[in-house]
Length: 222
Image 1: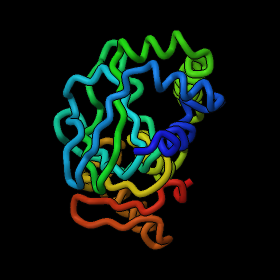
Image 2: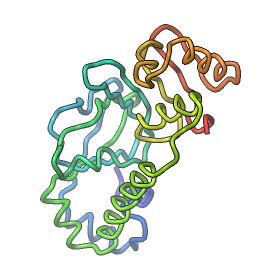
Image 3: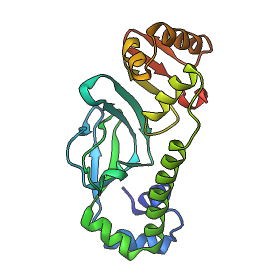
Image 4: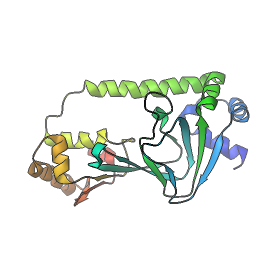
C-alpha cells in the first residue's frame, strides 16, 4: 500500500482525527504497525481468545458474531472499514475477544500491540486525547442507559434487547434466537413476543423465521 493511501485511510479512523499530516507521518515512521492482508472467508479472531492488541480495519468488511453465555443465542453484524476493533479488550480485566471475526471480503488490518500502543499514546497528544475521549464517551453512554426510564411496552423491550446486544447501533443485524428463548430473556410469554415481531414485520422493519430474526437496518427500529 502506498504511504499516501495509508495516511488517507488512517485519517478516517477517529483515533487519528485532528493530527496534521506531518505528525501522522512521524507517528507511522516511529511506530511498529503490523499489517495483515486477510482473504475472504478467513477467521481473524475467535470469541474468547486472548486479545491484548488494538486492531484497525482499514479496508474491507468483517462479520462479527457473539454468542451468549450458555450458547443460548448468537448475534451477527457487519463492520465496514475504516473501523476500530475490540478497543475495550486491549487493557483491563478481560483481555479476550468479545466476537468471532470473519472477513467477508478481502481486507487489510493494522494491529498494534500494547507496547507500541503505549509508545504512541505517549508520543502523540492528539492520539492520547482521542483515546481518552472515546473511552469516556463509551462510559458516559453506559451510565446514561443505566438511568434511562424502563420501557413501558413489550415492543420497546424487544427493541431494547436488540440494541443492547450489538456493537454498532446501526446497519444489518441477524439474531439467531428462538422465539421462546427471546420470551425467556424478556420474562414474557412467547405469544406476546410473537405479536410484537409480527407487528414489526408488517411494518417491514424485520423478517423472521425459526430461530432467526433478520433486521436490515437496526436504526429504523428507533
